[in-house]
Structures are given as structure tokens and as C-alpha cells.
Image (cartoon, rainbow, N blue to C red; front, top):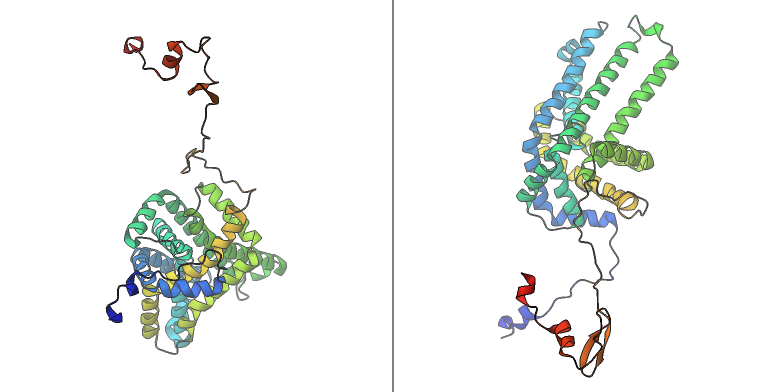
Length: 360
């Protein structure tokens, strides 16, 4: 019967066309998203467990900044406004929720080495390389421990300093504050531009930092330099990707016309299952082609290994002796030729056994 014919199982399939034109990145994104949907959920949950401390730090930084604002600016009390006005309370809560989700998904506040392992998995999904989810996640977390911790503390310090500077500007620039008239408006405008510039640059650099950690062998100084240069080169597309990330996270936070508890529950579920991996996959489809163009395929880029180690074996051409056949015997031109072709010494020189006493 044809139903049980072995040809159904032994007949070769269509195979893969070597010369097939690669699909556009937009189409590839949805193909990878669908094919890796289960593993994306798995790695998202793994990272969610490690990201809980980062979320706590982000919430504390946000709440602490507003608490300091209340201490230094006596003209208006945000805490009283939140407690009295229900609309202000809901807006404060949703902004806090958005801040914690966004800045741990980009990630200015992160768990460092764990996010490096998470980024390696996302990069493997982008390149469609086979992985062992748990094993590769733990392995890459350990191998990027040192640089991941340095990057985590760098982002933490820079993020808190920027938040404090913005808080100080809000205090100084408040028209009801007595110090408002002491500083020219031009100076206030310049200060605002500088603060916005550094805040945006820090977020854009985090698009490249962890993918670069898991792709290249480089020092922390080289990491900061390269990410800053790439931000300057691709500032407009990088800004567009950030705005897309902002939109994707802000929609479920601000658009849902529900009670704060429901909004909180929905977004926590989305964060535990979807947000970090989905945002990271979008960013990887933008970041890795930039790496390939400016670093991997660029002949002028420095690809040297600073440690002096390399995974590639050096090719050494095979050395072949030159010579000729004479009277049925191979005579090499690299060795001295015996004067008498009939001598037995010629055979000993080119193929005879070596006397063991001479070796001793």
C-alpha cells in the first residue's frame, strides 16, 4: 500500500537553495519570532528571575529622585499632590511602572552578566544558530562576568547621576523657586539640552553594549569608546529604535483604561513573558547589521586579539621535496647525491634504517 510505502520516508526533500536571495530583515524578524516563540518565552522567564534586583533598583531610583525633589523644592509637594489627586496618583504610578520596565529592558538598570548571557541567546536566535538554552545562558553569563559587572556599575552610576541632574534642574527651573531669576534663561536652556543629550546617549549606547560584549573580545575602555562612536555614526536610526521601544512599552502602560492594580498585573505578566526578549530581538535586528558593516566586514577595523590568543589555526603550506627518478630510484635534490650510483650508501642515506647506537 502507498500509505505504508518506504518511499515517503526515504525520498529526499527540496533542500536549501545555496544561491537563494536572503529575505528582508522585516520578514526574517517575524520568521524568527514565530520559529523561536517557545524559546523566547523560556529565556525571557529566565532573565525575569535575574532582573528582579534591577527592577527594585530602578523603582528605588525613581522614587528617591522625586523624594529628593520634595526636599529641595518647597513650592510644591509631589507627595501631597499624589495623595490628594487621584489623576496625579495614577499618572505617577504608571510612569514609575514604565520607567522600571523600559530601563531594565534597554537596559540602563540591569543584572550585568545575566543580561550578557540573555543577549547571547537573542543573538543566536537572530543568526539562527543552534543553542542549548539553559547551558548557553549560564555559560555566557560566567564567561562575561567581569565585563558584565563593569558595564552594570557604569550604567548604574551614569543613570543615577543623570536622574539627579534632571531633578536639580527641575528645582532650579521652577518659576516659583526664589533661585529662578538668578540664572539666565539661556543658561537654563543650554543645561537642559546637555542633560537631554547625555540621557539619550546613555540609552543609545545600551543598544550596542551587551551585543558587543558577546560578539567581540575587547576591554571595558574599548567597549565604551566603540559604543559611543557607533551612537554618533548611527544616531538617527538608533533614536528611531529607541522611540519604537518606548511606544511598545508605553501602549500597555498608559492606554489601558483600567485600575492601577489591573494595569500592574497585566504589565508584570507581559514583562515576565514577553517584554525583554521581544525588545532585545528588535534591537538585535538593528544592531548586528551595524556590527557587520562597521566592524566585522570592515577591513580597516581592528580585529586583533589583545590577549594574543586566537581560535583559528595558522595555515602552514606543505613542504614538498624536489627531485627526480633515476633507474627506478627517487633522488632528492635537497640531499647530497652519492658520487657512485651503484653504492649501497645511497640507499642507506635515503631510506635505510638508522643505527640505534648512533642515537645513543
